[in-house]
Image (cartoon, rainbow over all chains, first blue to last red; front, top):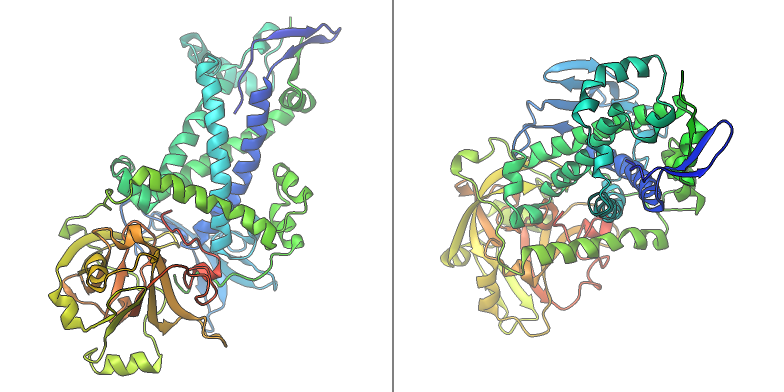
Length: 281
Length: 266
């Protein structure tokens, strides 16, 4: 999640202008958020593994979850295959989901594999400690970011205009051809960037609210949360699915960083300076 | 509390942590400061979150007012997963169970003016509360059940808390983990705010029938604004205490001794 600060010309250069793209606050928030997200994701998968199934209701339906990760066992109780079941359809995901290699090299029953969880081995208590510590940092960091977004009047940089929306097909074609905006066009986010970043800015608060809805104490204080999310287990599902969406965003984000000038992009998020390439003719 | 929860391993080696974090460059700053979440120093930092969570949630809840949602009878779950101990083999408990819990007595002592012993009949004679609530396990699943029992507050009022009392400890009949020093016996502690909450009951009835052994017969605690592991089953003795540091491993409960938060509101 980023925000374009006003495009100040910093220094003219023969190959293009250098502008200050991101304020210090945005850059710090971005990296704090990045670290928090990775820790929260991996500790979250650890927590998910303690009950690797999702139900769209108040309570857990162990017989008919809409998503579950499970293992098939032999007569001795050893895991032989990992299964991912979505709406009743089972897929063999041995080695990754449902059952994967443990420390001893043997197949063990676990939802997400050890390389994806924090800690790597099964330890729900430690997963919760990591999760809630970094959740607080994420929330405080997010409040700072939102305060800047609203009071610094930066929301317009993410909010697509009608003209932007009409240009979506054109932007998609350009992206597919790996032709990225240059010149004055690159002073602002293009419509696909706006939509992607805006979706993340909207997803995070919903994801956090869904997470809080899993807290029995928060439910007592704000029972409307249960109504909003269709129950505690549904909130757990929303929390999980939004996290999955953010992973999807992260992958696309990283790919785009690499494809559209990795050094320029990284510099803009570290020192703030971004080089605008001369406009194509 | 369950078989699914592995007892935490004592140490997380740095290699393992790095292996866990290694897939992401974004997490590199963590490993760079030789973070070892098994070390007491690192753990004590992570554990700071619990105090913040508790303080904020207490502020949101108000001390006693907020009630956990109660559901209509139609919402009761067809299946309520029994967890933790489901059939205690401790000889004392087995004997009581064989006698239909006629000889079972709830001892109430510690920092109280009048230590008392209550039979099931005595408890049933106390003012009761029935509630249909959602049970949230730390593992992540939920089930709705009906519970009926004596309010813990009325039992504590009958015994009379001494001014020094700050926590209520519940000692149970079941051994959930075999240990040499008897620290595998289940117990729990809760604060006075939750102990005197109207929905905090000593339940002897579940889903309109006497509490089954798998769910904690003859008596289990309900603390509706916290997670399931706080709700001790097979309760034998209740003590008012000023500090839980000297009980078992000193962290205020069986699962707390194994790394889980004492405040289980989240």
